[in-house]
Structures are given as C-alpha cells and as structure tokens.
Image (tube, rainbow, N blue to C red; front, side):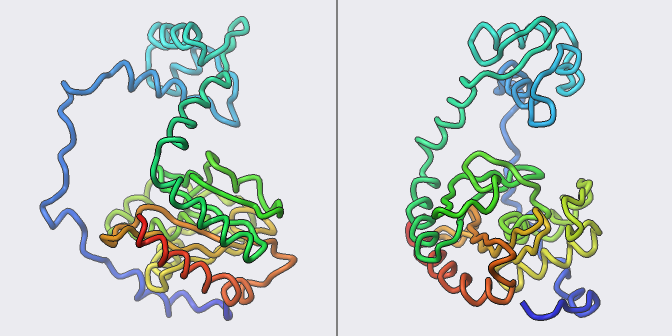
Length: 279
C-alpha cells in the first residue's frame, strides 16, 4: 500500500455505526434449565489444555476452569476413561482422540467444504498460500487452507488459532461487527505484541478495523509474524451476512505490500464474489 496515513486523517473512519441492539431482534438465548451443565464443564476441561500448557495437574485444571478440585478430578477421570485424556502420575494430557471432535466439524460442516476448492484455485493460480477462518472470541480459527507448495507460516493450516487483532482475517471479521461491539471487544483484549510491528494501542487498532470496514479488505504487514504479509477479505452469503474471511499470505522478502494488493487483491475479490453465490 502507499505510505501510512496520519492517524488523525483516519479517525473519521472509526465513527460509531448503528448497533444490532437497536433492532430489537437480538436473541435472548436458551433457558438455563435447557442446558447440560456437565457437557459445558467437560468441554471447558478439554479447552484448559493448550500449547503453553499441554500437561496439567488437577489443581491447575480446577484453576483454569473455575471448577472445584473435586469436580475437576471427576471430569478428568471421566475423560481418561473415555480415551480423550491420558494420565501420567499427577499430570494429565489430551490424547489424539480429541481430534475426532474437530474432524466431525471438518467432515460435516458446509462452510469448509464450499470454501476449500476456491482456496485451492486461488493458491495454485497465484502460487501463494491461502486460508479461510472464522472469529471465535479473541481468536480466528482456520477452517480451510492450502499452501500451494509454499510453506509461509505454520499458522496456515486447519484448526490453528491466531489472535484476531493482528491477523488479516481477524481484522475484516471484526470490521463486520457493530462499532459498539468492536469497542467492547477491544476493551477486553491485552493486545500482546507478537512482533515489533503489531498494533497494540487500542485507538490505533480501532482505526485499523475501521479502515478495513471502509475499504472492504485488510492488510497485515508482519504484525502476526515477522516476514508474513497478508491481504484478507470477508466472505458473505447470499443474504449479505459475513460468515468467514479469506486471505492470501506471502513472504515479505518476495513481495511488498503494494505488490501484494496489486497482484493478489483482484483475484481474491473475484473468489469472494463467486463464493457469495454458493454460501
């Protein structure tokens, strides 16, 4: 892209948009008596494990889930009995069987099946990596990806999670939210700098999200990883609802941001238009 604009020139883009709360159509959600608390807590135990903490004790699981130590023990023993967790003395860890949960989504969900062929066309036409993702809390989860033979980043594979605030797919998905929801989302974030280029100032992030909303696409220049440049667009269904985001990622040594936008954005927008007829 051209030289970065001054923040005060972009401030107008961050003006509040109408929120969905004013429409009166917001769902109140299910009644508490209709929910299965045990299932909710069991899934929370599985989610307690991550890359930084692959092995946990009962006390650590209890602390991360808000369960009592006795309850955490019962859930861990149940998951061990079912084969989703393994135990080595006082330490517990997830087993490969947990992958079945993700595979059930990848094999049954309509969205990845529709998006994946278009990603392959894009990636092999441009000889660059392409991926699609959805917003999940603070992160973007990759639901489909292809590298076209280029290993650009280990994050570009199905099932990986990356922070939404510094990823292309995250920026365009956040730009689809009402401004009040964007403000609330930013207020909840720690905005950890993953590289020296990561935007960590809340107002600057608000402006960047507004820029993505105004332009219809987002560019990320080495904010997620050093050497990784990305351009992303939202994916809309036939009703105009944004259901996912799709990007092209390149290595910074091979392509400038101007070249990335000029070379990759037009085919990305063509794929976006094509997928809108299918979603």
